[in-house]
Image (cartoon, rainbow over all chains, first blue to last red; front, top):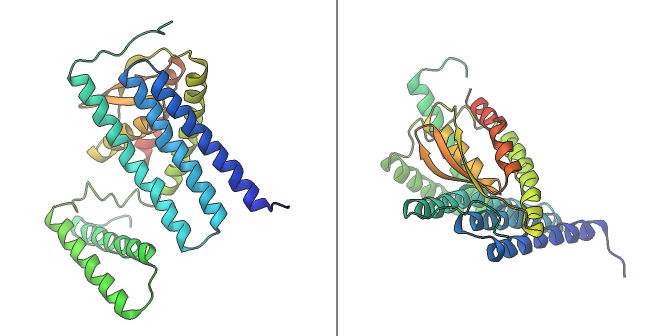
Length: 104
Length: 164
């Protein structure tokens, strides 16, 4: 069984993307308050999806499809900060204070 | 396009918007038959009319000047996202986070630039813009290193230069 290089590269990129999504999910559970959890969600949005889409583009070869795939992170770049900011602003306005220090 | 008056700049931005919409339609559909291209033209015209009616084609919202610099800016932004993403990931795994609030000054001139800067801060993992008060942002950062990266003002300068 022989891998060619393109499959290998896309596999590595997929693994990196999965790792970022895993750490983002871990952060969602582990971090102390709502503001810090937004950071973890942003990690999934930007790096996780970005690397996975990049891997898919390399795997499927360059065609019209890869432009379509490129549109996904482009839209995420525009929409994900808006949602993050909306959550943060709402939490701030309803009086949540961010936890200052390490909880340990 | 050094010296254009306001009207021709507006026309130019209309044409650019139209071309962008049509290219977008073509990428999403991929059809080359003339009938379908005609239908695509009709739908693009419809969207164009709708956004004209919604006054979404003001000068400020369709910045022609920066459209050529955008790809370079996105590459730079992706590099920044990757750097601070790695920092955030290590913070999550080793648990040495110390969240803090800082205020950041923005030096962009128009509304698009300020929104751009706020979005870029939120987009880089580890920093979130909470509140925007005229030209000062309230930013929540996950650790001291991330907030100091922001306070070096590099990102601010790049985004201000984008609009020159």
